[in-house]
Length: 271
Image (tube, rainbow, N blue to C red; front, side, top):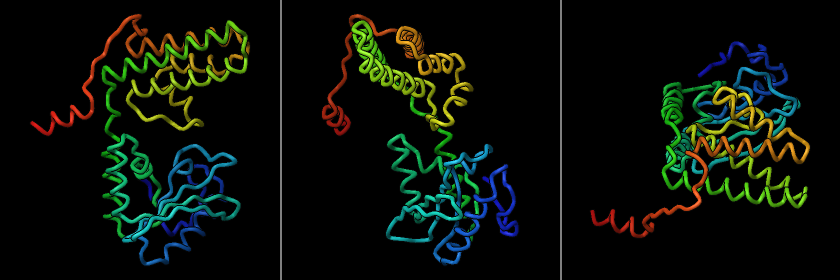
């Protein structure tokens, strides 16, 4: 958690960010801090990271309200910078923490886990929200169970066979379409096996290098190869490694029995 003090007036080049972003933040905060219902204003996303924002970067701002019966999401432009803002009450933020954690998609918790605090009226409430968010994001993604692993390998195997069929037919359009889907399938399985949330595309390569340099190299080869034959070979190498991470190739014959959901519910109700 980082705090930009009000006396700095946002004219510092925080972490190398361009001054236009600071000016836009200053004007936005000055406007909304006057609302007595506003407890805090936080910025997350690319601005809150050490690297400088890109040409088309926007500002992601969360406005924490003391109370509100509604939520508000909007976009505005200040000083040539696009600002996407989200207004939520403390109660609504905590509700999102709970529901998103249950659905294994803790987006709001990730936003609140490491923001820059631009303005806060009641620090204890905001600090507690950040503490709760960090406790959620520290939890690892649930481990893939036996059924998940089988189906992951089945998806790779099915798309791999489709890719080979269209490769032999020299159907370039369908080949590139299936290749794209197969690469994404491998990427999805990789992050599930590593049990960490997937990084945004612009930050993905660096994240992969830190997690598994071999997978990053194979994925890069599968994406960047242009010739049909070379690309096909590169994707085969990627899928073999993804299958290895998932426990090996899908066996030729296999069987998996699970209870119907209704049977599981009845069994749990009777316990």
